[in-house]
Length: 136
Image (tube, rainbow, N blue to C red; front, top):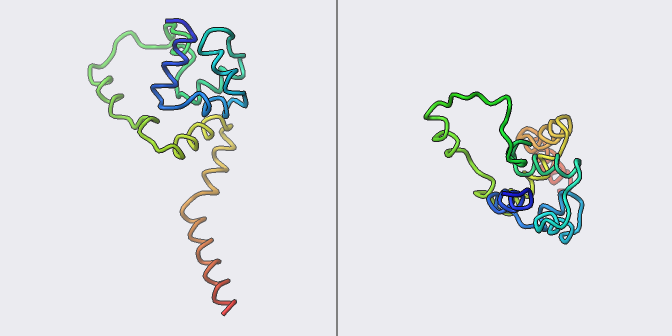
């Protein structure tokens, strides 16, 4: 399978549209469509983002053997992998959140997660109630 075919495979398997992927890459949909048609290939920056969006390794995208992979595989390993929640099981908004989250740096991910913790929302609710009571 060629790179362009693998791009389409990973995108469709993830349940994403060309437009969604292009938006995260900061490209026109037609530019991303050229990647999938084989007319052009993504630059290294786009490849790195694609790996995060599809949650795959470089070796999976390039269809090359992973030199760090262990030759012996536990027979239960595949069964476990099939039980994971896949991005295509998510709603459209959840997919969008996940793909944007994946392209953030680890520090940005940490900051975002801390800003949306349940404690943060509880604090906002309490402040909101206090403001409503003050208005009365």
